[in-house]
Image (cartoon, rainbow, N blue to C red):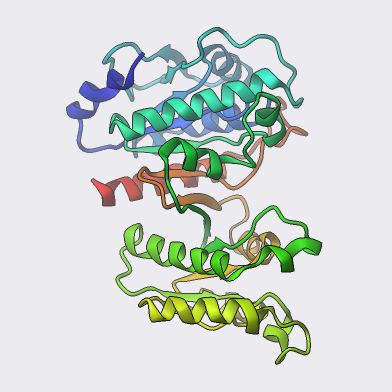
Length: 344
């Protein structure tokens, strides 16, 4: 089924955007949170949703959750958004074989990537307005032969995008990350002027293009306590972060010098900054999840398409138990709808 699948459907309705929701790893909670979210009338009123994933997996998920939804295949130019239906486009060449919930499997990793690739194809052909991705398992996709640390790098390759980054939003905070899954021990070596500068540029770009802030103020977090205290607690601020921020300012970006993280996030909540550049994973995610736990959304910046995602992983420990919270997926849908409206 080629990218022309949804063209006529899109022309029928200009009121609600068409979203492609990739199921994520079928052994995780992705199919569950998608099914739970799309069973809610308030979510379906926002968009025309289409799940890109295994139809049998979605059927089993809906049955296990006892949801009042009928799983239907997207055929040709069939309509989306009918009451009581869950529309599924299955891109898999052959049905997914047996797998165990909560376990890493090569077949599940391959299926995850196939769904993402199909979603990107449809989005680039403008058959869908945005992609919302369920969580994938990095070990599983690597077992399947895809050497990527996560969605961001895979999406960059699929779209041939040169400069991309991960911004996570929650409550009043919008945070771009210089590094993500890096051991604390390796952080000083991972920070470079180029990486910090890229994060500042992407943060400013996201705030302008996606959120309509003409001249965004970007707060740049320091790495060390008290921003290094003049070199007493480290010199990364002086040698790496500050030069990158000053270069960004020379290019017209309103970026701060490195500021102590223990005060920067509070200032952003109060409105002093439109977005923050965090140096590492927990520096940004701890305050985010304090103010918006279960409601955070991942936005990939720098792509030619819109992609939002949940802020959690596959949660193998609770997969198949029916207890997963769809809150982050719902927020990812809402953000995709808002961004699609801006881009149209």
